[in-house]
Amino acid sequence: MKMSRLHEYLLQEKAKKEAFLISNENENTNSSQGNKKRKYDYVVNAKPDTIIVFRLNFKSKRDVSLTKTISGKILNNDCENEMFTVETKNGLQYGVPYDVVVWVKTGDKFPRGVYDEMKRGAVEVAEGQDLELSELEAPEVEYDSEDI
Image (cartoon, rainbow, N blue to C red; front, side, top):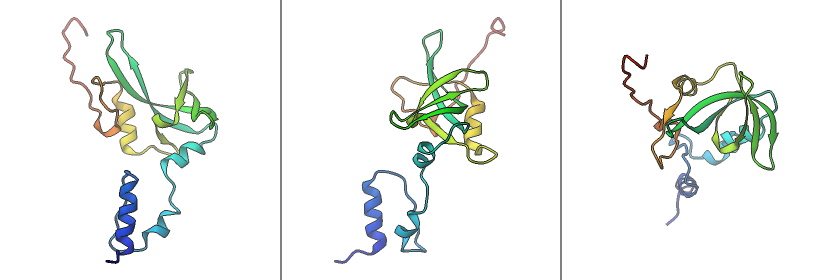
């Protein structure tokens, strides 16, 4: 039984275990995919002075695991160790591995979802939780009148 080119393409992409686009209108999707840039391509080729958004994981004073999405300017791109040296607006410098980069800013604005994540602030992370951007939820915190 001969498989169609679309069916072969779907099997190849499924084997990669990544999300992929399915288009029923154009059966020749392999040729169009070669021109698309992936997020990793933008990360690896980011130049100094480029703004990136990355996820920072830290512990609070009460020993609670938190994550926060922040932005900073690239000072150095170390391709060998797959790491950036990044400086934030307040002058703090971070070593940022490629895999925690959420977005590389190439235009004038951030996408709405990335902007919303930065505005959200620190979010509590349950022990062993996978830190996917879309799964993070702001904790509901109740304050006493003494806390305010």
